[in-house]
Length: 81
Image (cartoon, rainbow, N blue to C red):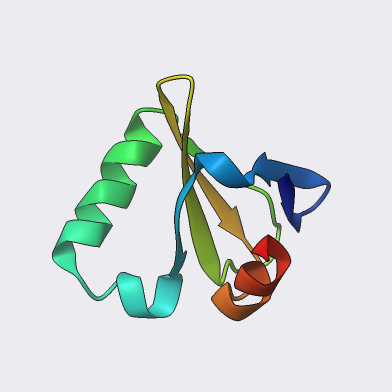
């Protein structure tokens, strides 16, 4: 099954590690460090031109991806069920 995460992007539900709220998660220095390193390694994909509200962390075929999306975590969670 696939989850629509916005802007014609969909990810396989089995590949999703987590869905995180950017406002809450970015308070942690560990999360900021993780996102900075992911961006430096080219693993961050911004799928919105707007300010992102959440990010979806996936792992598939040994590759990690961080998708920045305009949807909030509640909307993404509902789409996953």
